[in-house]
View (cartoon, rainbow, N blue to C red):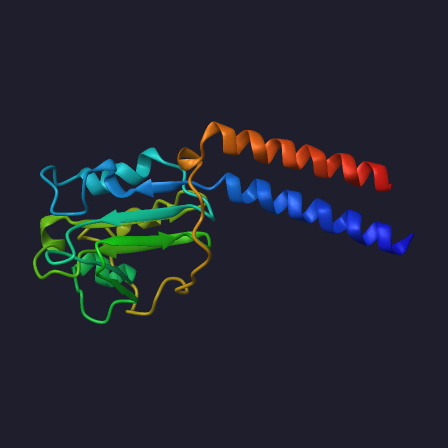
Length: 186
């Protein structure tokens, strides 16, 4: 009986993990063709406010690798456009950043002068914090250069938008089949 209970528990956990994996979203930063110096100076400050980012989501930065890069920086470096000593540096032109915890994440271009031309992005995961706006405001005081969060990576989440309807149907059928098997065992 103990073995059946253990296998039932494992099946339930696997089903929950499957549902969590399916519910994550991959966002193309700014909904633009590429990560670059914006024509509208507010595009990267407005865009994150139109989304509710959660753990498991990911940000896709697309850009010509010979012309740009993406760096993750501290809040104070974000505010001052200091690109020295980034937390993370990516320059492959197809940079995927996984949101693995709640908090504020600060990004800018690694190219000299791009940050000053508003190629920078602040993303808040979890509840929105008005303090995050302070990083955009030149009048606010910044903390020391200590990172505001750990640099943590997770697996690449699958985008809801990238699932075909037949794959979604297969996942639903598989989940129902697991539920039937668990019910039969109990």
